[in-house]
Image (cartoon, rainbow, N blue to C red):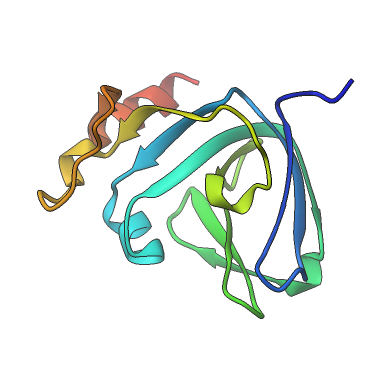
Amino acid sequence: MQNPLQHRGSCLCGAVSITATSKSEHIEACHCDMCRKWGGGPLLAVECAGDVSIDGNDHISIFSSSEWAERGFCRHCGTHLFYRLKEGDHYALPVGLLDSEADWELTGQIFIDQKPAYYDFAQHTRNLSGEEVFAQFAKE
């Protein structure tokens, strides 16, 4: 029986493929300035830890976006592949990257204090400011 939290996905050109196990079927939106600049809007991501397998590493470019995190993208087609912490096993994968038919549910928004006024989501979610996000990671 297939694990419902195991997902596969690939970049637009197919040079990179990812198999990952998500922590849940929950999606979080990140409204930080970097995510919005990276993708032109909020990053809608699935959290994964530990069980992320990537084929096609030669085709990935890594951008060190902060002292603690980096972002990966396909160097051929530009598809955003992941946001990951430099230490530990935390990955955030764009949900649109995955070929999954999971029952995804938007349950949280982070860096809500950086969200511009020109869009809102209809779902009621748990909302954390940037300060609250950093405090949460400090506890882990």
